[in-house]
Length: 455
Image (cartoon, rainbow, N blue to C red; front, side, top):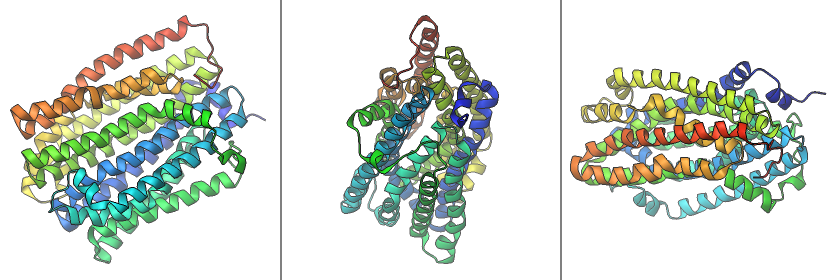
């Protein structure tokens, strides 16, 4: 009997990527939509200060995502290559290990953040005006964080075994439910920002229940049993190492958001923090389909690398780069041309709109080329090369953006913070393009077939 995952090594690349990418893109789009809807409803109900509270909560949520995606994408790389090499027990052990580790790690983060909630909010940039709103939102949203981590892991595993439609459903169920519950809790029950948090927590829980039911039903190609849930140190270390690039990117997002929130409190006002929070929501909305494309790219590249089919790997990289470039160009054009309309979705506050429009135009200037950065780190992660993936993941967010966002405001004020983004993107894109080109060419000068699931 031919397993679904075997199509990753035999189906023509373009139709395969389209088949895998469309459900992933749709699910990521819907997932981003309900985050965007959260901010729109909160902004309309409670104003710019409530949007600023969402901006303060964002880096905390990014830390949760960092751990979940690290184990999710790292394990997906192991699973893809293990299935390509027909080592199904290894794939199941890796999945079980990652589930136990991700839930345990995020549960610890949840307890710590709720116990020291006000201190956490201050560290992440909350002013006295914003803290009450942040407390109402983050104190509730963190309760469902362990279940969110498990759901993210499940989605990565489902895509790794070639079941993107099921992965899409796990996101779609929660997203649609959240969009329905948001106005009920925020406006109908007059709960404001607390209502948005409750709606999100309920929706994330329902998504987790669906994912758990699917794996328990035996419909997955990963036959995870109870003994597979006992963590294996070797697999955990490999998963963490391979997932380190996405962890670095997400953790760097948290550091950057925290740093910028604090700098905006110095050089600007609470409205400036709200501007950054609004732009973050818009960028997440625009970026998610791009990450959906990459989620299709990763299992195809990983499986074919594991099977020694290097020409298919190279073709996968080329098609994904072209697709991301086209999408990034369209997205950047829309945000450059219609920034006033986008900001007015969130608020009628003239201060927020006037400050936000030029900031958005600066930040999205390099968006047409962002796909090179995303594919670069994902390529090396997919083929089990953690070191270059980590370096490329660090390049934009840590090596370039942090120094720029600290130095430029000294001369340009708040504007310097916004200009730091395209400058960092330009340097990171050029370097990543050179490293990626060398890495792809190197596949054809190596006799190694990469049939092993370990580095």
